[in-house]
Image 1 (tube, rainbow, N blue to C red):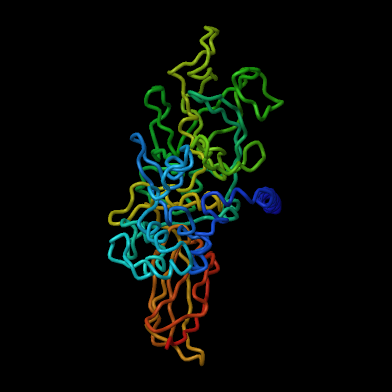
Image 2 (cartoon, rainbow, N blue to C red):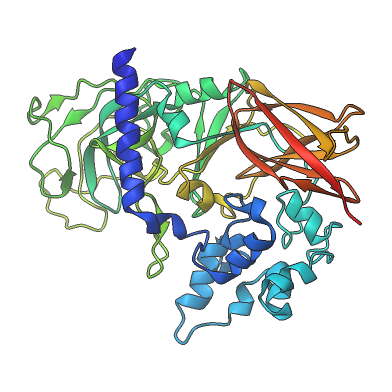
Amino acid sequence: MKKVLFLSVLVLAVFYAVSASTPALAAYSSHQNDQDINNFLAVYPFAGSTKLDDCSLCHQGGNISGKSYGSCDYCHQTFKLQEPHGDILLTLNPYGLAYNKTGRSQQAIINIEGADLDGDGYVNAVEINALAFPGDKSDYPGLIAAPAIVMNQERILQLPDYSEFVFLNASKDTDWYARYSGVKIIDLLRYAGARRDATGITVFAPDGFFKYFPMDAPDPQTDPSNIQYDVMGPYPYGTYYRGLDFVSYSFVPGHLVNGNQIPDKLYMLLAYLRDGDPLVTGKINPATLSLDGEGPYRLIPPQKIAGSPDRSKNGPYLKDGWDYDPNKDHNAGSSVRSVAAIRVEPLPQGTTDFQWTEGGWNLVDNARLVIYGAINPRTYWVRGNVADCKGKPVRDVQISFGLISLGQVGGDISSSMGTFKKDLPEGEYIAIPSKQGYAFEPESIKFHLSQMGYRMEFTAYPVP
């Protein structure tokens, strides 16, 4: 146990050291140095680090040449990459357009609070307090969210870790061998409370890339045209081929020679280390609109049909036995970089899905992971009370609870004794009190809910 604790602390220290040395990485998607988002957070300070603290607050996604882009990518594509720059107004949603037209200031945000700009039946202030996008008609208060947990990096590092030396075969890029360390997907789903009737998972990255994997599939597999990388496995042992000039060897195991079977038992993995180093956080390259980096989490599916490397599909054809072979298992194409969320299928009937191209970068930037869908997560208590400045209970106060990265997930109303309670899955939450004619101190409370539960207090002040 002491060894496990020491390793966890060591890995955390490495992660925090890297984070401290690269502060710019966290500023990409949330525009932290942008005056417009600072204006918004000055009016709504509770929205910091939530899904509203993102470019998707004011910008919208769109389609270009038949391809869908999230708001970040769409803005770069239609505005920043054009010479001269394109029309920024084309990238704005109704909320962004109104903010721009009203003067792009803190007062402008206050002036449009009472408008229902996206036409969903809720004015901006109500939507923002529910952590719903005020410029997106499909996102509004009261939606029934699917069961979800949000795990931060520290919590993920506390789960049983696993390391495997694995081969990833790419079709158009360089093949590579690497030692990835992380959490077995099967262990991750067990922790999240995946239901027995779960059929598979869909893994999402905020750049729009996603892959579906069945929970189980018949083994062994022999058909390269119909490979199913399943959660349960098993995966065959790999073979090590060294000294090839078209293969990347970032980690060279001294105990293996050419043609040796790799002794590591392989599993589908949510990786956070590559060759002992934290994965570089993914971000969109503004020049190419492609994803640079692979972290903080990457989904690693080992080969289902173990085989040797081959050259890129675009490489030379030399007839030496290493040319591109379409019948090989090119598992690298099913590896998901910069994972933001895992949906456990099927999505429960009557619940809403999330838009991972909108707000998903906030998860990546802050090393959070969402697991949602067909899960029955353990819940923990949240308790609190509301009183006036003299300590007298205040009843009928609506307490809204939102998962910081996803939006409102439930609430309660204070009783005649001023008390409220709610049981929620583990995650990072925000609690927001509201009642007509009252202001509250504090205006909101952000908290991490764990096995210890959480207790809070609000003071209500009548507004003249």
